[in-house]
Image 1 (cartoon, rainbow, N blue to C red):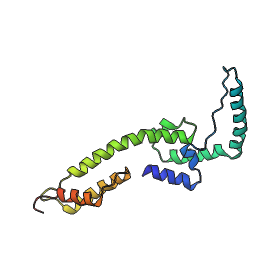
Image 2 (image 1 turned 90 degrees about the horizontal axis):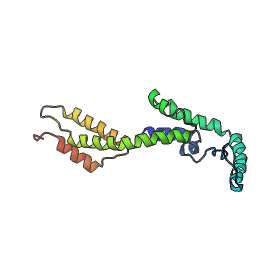
Image 3 (image 1 turned 60 degrees about the vertical axis):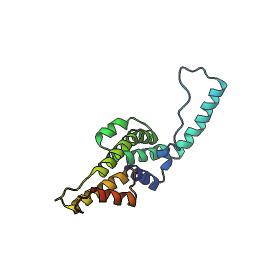
Length: 163
């Protein structure tokens, strides 16, 4: 859900290219230690033409807007991990790489817990079903959806035998 909210906020500003990395300032190809070849000089000439266009389009400001959208929603510890990255796309890639790996593991564990949940003989069935519904919503937030048929089977198998 977090990912889609950030993507929506950035899209609403008309700046999705800064998040996806399709709109970035090319890295300057010149380094003080280089002895330039003709091909390298062509790269520098090309860069010198692209950079003013990038500046003219106010891309530094737009990149900063996207970075602000991303970082405003982060706790301080996460912000400190990415704040030194210059491009919004780099920040976004860092976050998605870290958390998409974790979210898959968490989703599997949550699905396992949902399937193993049992209502006690004297427990409140309504509260039990509410808890299961919350778990299904959490799974959906990870992009894992439980079909109606599977959900019905999980609900029925979680009930005490007297039902």
